[in-house]
Length: 106
Image (cartoon, rainbow, N blue to C red; front, side, top):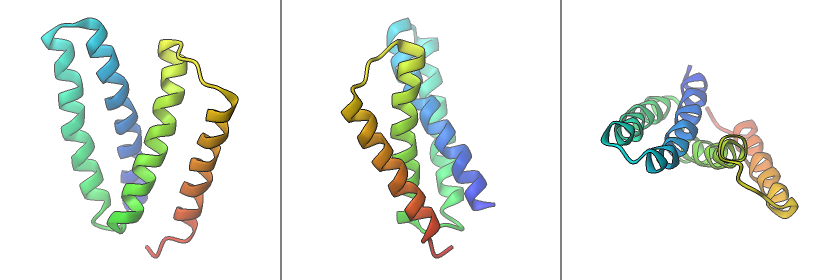
């Protein structure tokens, strides 16, 4: 169950980070409430996942996949550009996450 919760936390992390840019573009207090709310949900989910998964493993996967997801989300939602070199390094992050998961103790 910890891995499912961690997956949801990763998705929430991606939504949170993308909502920061969206809220900045909107410029209203209502829009600013979205990332604040998501940050609480995000931290709670990560904490729950850490009940079953070691802190280092959970955090590495959460940040790695979160970063890659935010880059992809920025490309899709905000027409941000990335270079081939950046894509290569994103692939290395994903490889690291897969290795971290495969060799996790829990």
